[in-house]
Image (tube, rainbow, N blue to C red):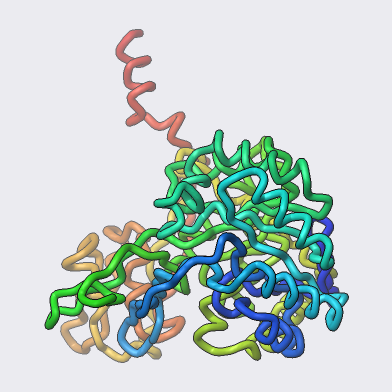
Length: 421
């Protein structure tokens, strides 16, 4: 049976599933309930100089029958005093000594960072996460994503923390940046023990068309907020893989961004993560989702004959290459299973109007026909088809060797070389 115990940058926990810093980790009461449910760790809601929050605070994007496909918040860091948070962290560690309690921090001055680090270590926290990612409210004050977007500042403040911290330090990165690897490498240069990503993405989730006011509405006004939930998972996976694949980056990665199922968790591990943080799914479904997360991930590891998540980490990331490294002679075409086809013709419409006009309709039935000589293997028909495994993509042997862009006749470099001969 797979071993789910985790040692992430020196932070030990019963399993890799941690609550991400946010509303579910706002109080000791919540964190203890989460640990009772089976969570391995919790990153406390960000500590700092207490602030005032607004009402309302959340918005969401729902798609058809799927509620909260994307989630937006304009909530800031803790609005409770540092003393209260420190006392509750101490209580949690005393009752759950084998679970990971990580203090998320956000301050302005070196003295404030050092003071809070000492107070947290005195009560036994297992590590720190530096919030360099919050994209609203705090960044306007020179904190949060304002730090994460500036590699020099990211490195400097990380080094401040490393002067004082004796427990592992994780830097939480902002996705609101052109090149995530620059911030990750800055954190590494600053001495961090690990990174976590992604934090939330700048967003406005929608407009109330009757009131003509952006959501969430605060007395007729609104502001940009942080976007998260299942909708951001593809962005998060890409950024995790970018860091995982960088030849100079050597730190462990805690994956965050839209994790809701064990399958999501496995994808982040395959992209290079060795711990997983979840917030929005808990806000939607509650702490008990961890039961299925643990069971599903354990069964998946067993099915692959893998003993621990570290053995699986990064296996898919290593297969993410630059476009020019892909074989241009590899070919697939669509194949329709007529026994499963319900005749909806969505594939025909999609291909005819939005792709390559590679599907015809059988005049004697409603069953579409793939025009093999025109199909470019784009996958669109299989994606729009409402019936599982009705349309599959089948590899076609072309009899040609591998061809990459560097060697392609259409490459301008090759055209210039040919013209100069």
